[in-house]
Length: 351
Image (cartoon, rainbow, N blue to C red; front, side):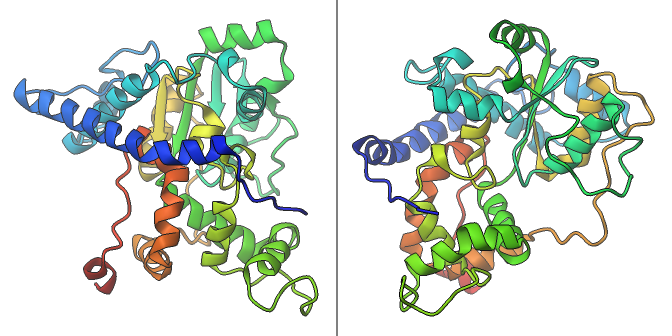
């Protein structure tokens, strides 16, 4: 496979602009927090959906009905995220609907939005954010699968309806009338999870991407070098490859969530997070009217999540210039979904 280095002026321009986008997001977020403090909103804060037509207190009411305490910090984070998305997506330069996207952007989005007509919802899946379990749930809701605990290899396409397979008028209707949601994850944690899974476990990815990455970025492993299997790609080599990739043409497992789901073009009613997966998933299931006996799958005991310590180790091991150059590619995921940038200062990495 031929990986082309991205050198177009448009890509260079977008990379140069992204730090100012982050600065803008921080200003918006800080402004939102200051306003909340000024008006004494911290003690009685309701959590609205990020965008869309839901009731402001709907999510909070659900959490309280489950007998759980509503975390004030979490509510503040949600409010900041909501304000940031509304403000940044309101800029003229941002897409305002699906049809204002480029053909490539629209194709990517529609291929990642799953449809359930019985319960009238749309789910934009982001790989490495529990999407396999969500797809399993959709199959259960459609009757294609008996229950979420059935021990079968997950087929990511069969028995699933994608928005891309519908006609334009059918797409418009569902975007307007259905409940729409997605789940996001800390960008670097998601990236590391994809790296460890695809290059550490999946032979197809080792052959398709790993071999070329090693030949391209490892000294002494050029076209005339010894044969390589692609099963020992280092994280730094993977990052170098990402730096040469156009975000709109990346593999879905490391493409930014923003580019996959286009939260400015689609008015999502709810954006859940991997960090609060069970709680947020339970809310979505009850919100769409799923039968009470259907629950989100519990994490399997063999699954080894990426820990904070593991992520910090990998990021601190990277040459800092690589990390500095990588962050702009994922800056919209950090800013729109309110994730702090990684702290890899020397004292923090030594600790």
